[in-house]
Every structure is written in structure tokens, then in C-alpha cells.
Amino acid sequence: MKSVSALRKCSLTHSSWPTSPLVFDFLAPSHLRQNYRGYKSTTQTPFWGLSSDTSSEPISNTPKPKYVLSPKQREYLDSALRVNQAGELAATLIYQAQTPQVVRSHPHLRPLMKHMYDQEAVHFSVFNQMIAKHQVRPTAMYPVWQVAATVLGWSTAAMGREAAMACTEAVETEIGSHYNDQVREILSWQAEAESRGEELDDELKDMLATFRKIRDEELEHLDHAVENDAKEARPYDPLVNVIRLGCRAAIRISEKV
Ligand SMILES: [Fe+2]
Ligand SMILES: [Fe+2]
Image (cartoon, rainbow, N blue to C red):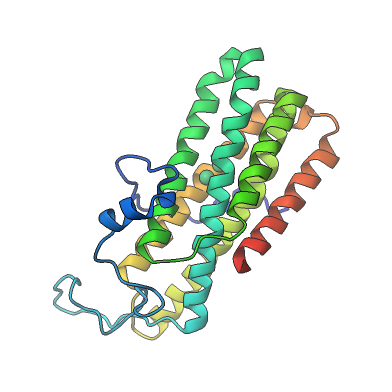
């Protein structure tokens, strides 16, 4: 398991949150078509690294050439956005299912549960907007993850506060690590671009900053879970290991399907 400090080695540099969450908004295609009218398809005109699309670039005295992503890199980003959207969907549903039971027996946890849910709702909204904007296909497993996440949230909360927190610890460990892998991958592209005297497309820079911010918030949730006795859950090891295994499987499946 990667340490939390290792996961946090890249600092937050930028924020690009929407002003209001759009939970479940991707399920309303006509609404999204209105909101995102004018964006281009990634399949025909991918947004990242297109050197020919310079109409919206700021005027600069010495503009660097843009780093052009390979088809494999574009495929990586499509897959990353699909997984991230699915993960944030699951996170919102886990907290939604846990909160009533946890808060009923431990009212002092209401602000914490609300805080974590609210952050997940914003994450979900961010990725709903990103996949709509770049026309990335959501995972075909979406309905399955909806049921699985709700069952996971409900059942861990039924086991008690400690098990609910152990669930958060397990999920955030995997998700935080996954976001960190994405940050590292884009940073490697940035390094390659700089070595060639090029720079990343502005939109890709924003995406990198967004991934970093969300990763840091997931790791904050992990800390909250540990502070609230996640490790006192019984049986701790089997519970956390099964949830982490499930998360890794869901990530692998959502990358492809
Ligand atoms: Fe999240
Ligand atoms: Fe989270």
C-alpha cells in the first residue's frame, strides 16, 4: 500500500470547480446538449494537444508549440475520465447509503458525513461535465456500480460506525492511489513536452490540477476515516481487503467496459 505522504507529494496548484453541483446530470442528455453545446467530439477532434486548434489560445509574445498527444495517450485520458466518473458516482452513493444509519447512532458525525458527501457530489459533477464535454462514453457498468455502491454503503453502516469508516478508508486508499497514478502519467507527458521545448494544452493543464485537487480531497477523507476509528472495525482486515479488491476490480473493468 502506498503511504499517504507519498500520494500527496504533488501539491495542489489550481482549482476549477463549477459553481453548483450537477449530480446525475449526465443522465439528462438534452440538458447537457444545451449546456455543452459547441464542444467538439474527442473521436473526431480531440481537445488535448491539437496543434491545429489555436483559435482560443491566448496571445503570447513567445508561444511554445503545444504537445500533441498520441492516440494511445488520448485513449488513456478517455479511460481515466470514464473510471473517475464511475468512482465518484460510487462515492456519492456510498455516503448517501451510510449517512442515515451512521448519523442516527452518532449524531456528532453529521457534519463530517455531509462534508464528505458534498465534496463527492462536486467531484461527480466535475467528471459528469468532463465526460459530456469531451464526449467520453460512461461505463456500461454504470447501473451495476449504482447497486453495488449502495449495497456497500448500507451494509457497512449496518455493521457500525467503525465499519462505515473502514469502508471509506479502503475506498479512498484505492481511489487516492488511482488519482495519483493519473497525476504522475500527465506529469510525465509534461516533462516530455518540456524536454522538446513544448507545453501541454491549457485544458490538459487544468485537468492535471483538477485531478490533484480531487486526489487531495480523497486523501483527506481517508484521514477522517482513520481519525474516526476505521481501524477499530471488526473484522478489520477481511473487510478492508475485500473492499479494496472490489475497488481495483471495478477500476479495471470500467477502464475497458
Ligand atoms: Fe471523490
Ligand atoms: Fe472521497
